[in-house]
Image (cartoon, rainbow, N blue to C red):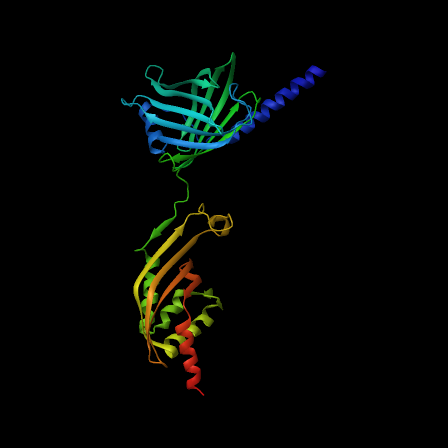
Length: 357
């Protein structure tokens, strides 16, 4: 009876482990029909180069103790004759100790018409080696079966290489019998010794349609064209001018009307520069949050200029620097920040008050 229960538990554990493995696998796996088909996949998917990960070692590989902080570098390249994909790795502990170093290759057997692969190296100063069998590949990644021999022990592992983007990968390592811990490494592409590519991909543009709209908005102030401002701002726009808060388009248009029709004339924005930032969801915003955590899409335009005008009451020629930020949603400005020295504005407002006495 005890043996039956034990056997049932073992079968259940194997079933659960295989289910977990299946969840980690790549969809639509296939075997390559030729070497060129496989090689093209590696090149087109951006696999070539050096990839970096960090973490804490786990109880999986016989020759690497668990619980050690590490940084790993993996490099993938093509041999000069383009008949092999070459790979190499190093895993370095926080104290500088080499935990693992090794290399290997992927090639094509023209008789059997299949991929073959082998890797070897040293874990903790002692050798390991073993063949790798390609379970399948697709544009999303690869799955391998790797049989390692190390320190007198031989065991089979399953390796899943997930292509999450051109510059990021997730590698999953686990024993096929369900023993040991599962390793999941998140890798980033390295473009120099000190620079690792991230998925930020934020874009700054100066000739895009949104930047052109901002330029037109500033130009419209010279003509006193408030109709353009009506289409420029969203109904519920939030405006912060230095420390003054203005809620909604209606209230802000009233303020603009007073500035352009009552306080100043001949308004010009000299040396105007505008650029627009299209922020990646992965880019940091503030307080440790990414832009993706704040909202689905973040677009900000930034503008700098010298405002030149003539006071309608004082008749003074005035010039002062101004900086404005505009956040966009669905083609409208929903948030605006403006910064400038309010001295000139306050003088003109005071003169207007005196003229009414």
